[in-house]
Image 1 (cartoon, rainbow, N blue to C red):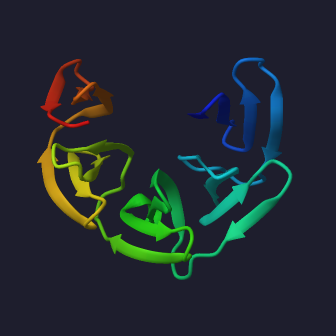
Image 2: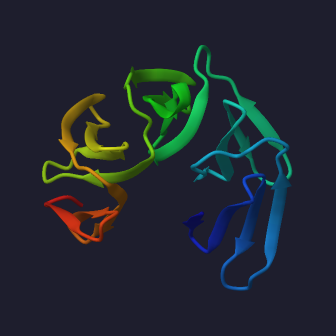
Length: 183
């Protein structure tokens, strides 16, 4: 689910994209996809980007386009900053930066573990960072530089949440780890 201005975008049952006005409840458009729509939908300049069958697709409700990225099989969209789209490939183990205007891959970081969840944040230096949760680690990736900043081993991770200037790592046993100083 993604909210931009007063428009809600959601994926229902992994195959239907819904766009609706949040104030009136009116459905603006729906789109059915025959294959599973994977994690992450991002609206950019009137288009909604999503991944399905290893491809990056975009729709505005009436038209659909396939965005061709050579040699990369997309898994999920993680975030969007300016003209750059960040997504996982290789079944979620690699992270890529793609420029939407030039239609070129800027960099690709290869990993060994599948990224299960991510959270875009900024640090005190105003760098764009991505916290990437894998099974037993949280990796801090600098999106501006295209490199990993840190790798924190945390067992039994359930989910990541941002609260003010902190990030909370909720664990499956009910405890929480706090990472201070992020925005």
